[in-house]
Image (tube, helix red, strand yellow):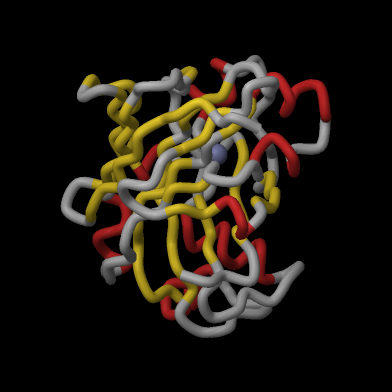
Length: 205
Ligand code: ZN
């Protein structure tokens, strides 16, 4: 995957917004994650020595298959090539202290991605996402509980920026986020679609 941008939704599950002490947004809250943060299955997530707490965020993401600009939510899914698990790894303390999220979300290795698989729009509401740390379930979320559905997020983003073939949209994380430690293995799975599993290491830099 070589996206021109990774567009993520923040606070898109009520229970997760609550656990962070945040309000539920009345419109989608979008942010960008640097494409240079992407890694694939098996590559190590590197925790910066000085960055404080770093959390996993298991999410359902889509790969855009054809350019989308000003699309209606009813047409949005025709622009999707596939669905895959994404771990929106976040330096939580820096996210709070920076205000803007770009740095906290974009450290190298902070975006493990799985392999996109085509999913019919009619099957979308049945998708779930499960995050395990060292084999133990830490998050379990359901697409039907999203505040804004993936087609709504695609339509909303496309009114601001052209979504190009190859771009990534991630739909936010359910409740249960928590910190990673060196030596952990974190896995994000969308049952029936696929999983991405990554060891966690201390970064020397
Ligand atoms: Zn996220």
